[in-house]
Length: 334
Image (cartoon, rainbow, N blue to C red; front, side, top):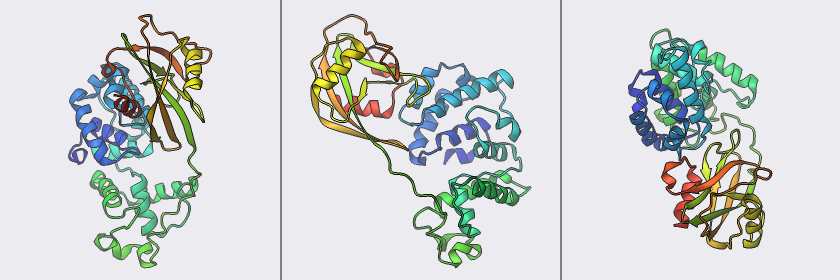
């Protein structure tokens, strides 16, 4: 992986942020594109947020991109574009927690600090036969203490990366390759044949299933897109107007569109639906399509726009930042 061959704190930071809840295979092309466009903190800090979001589009969890941009501006103004080299200072940057700060400080600056991500937790709980729920704060506190006691004075970054890679490639969540593990003879879970039951996690609640209707309206001015308000899901991103409706019909969606925009448009239901899985919810979209011949600017009723702050005709959809879901809807509507 390219981020394992660098000691540049900016590149390490970027990779760790992108890898949060995202698979390596998904991250790699984004990582290369992002570094090509923003090769250093100075270029990232100087860029408008909308351009950063546009380059991030499709990677998900967009708050990461906003925090990355905000932290770059903080480093530019406070540290004169030079990334701070101490763990405690790195931890003060927007969007950076103990794990990311530890990874940057140990790999880039050889500071003797631990890391504790899901991979390292899995290695430690199996190695030491820790059967407490890893979601509980007291268990996390114990694991941080253990991880800190193990970091060697020499090459702490190499050690931390080795622990992460051991969990990612050998001590995997399902079917761990114990026979290939360099710690097999030391592993208490392996000795007790409990490696498949550890780590212990609390049972997740059922994922809510939300049904919505998305409206694809075309006109001589382009497509009608709405921008999400700050602070919520997909904040600052553009999308086709959508409404939460358990049983959407052309009439009910037309009524919602009229209330939101004042536009009376006859809609036709698309044959297909789109399901989009997020971490804590499953969203099912029914698509409706229509045409408008108006050349007037689009208006939005702010009294009922619960999660939009503006709406307008977009001639070229490549010019605005969008979620992967909006890209899927756009492709299907075409």
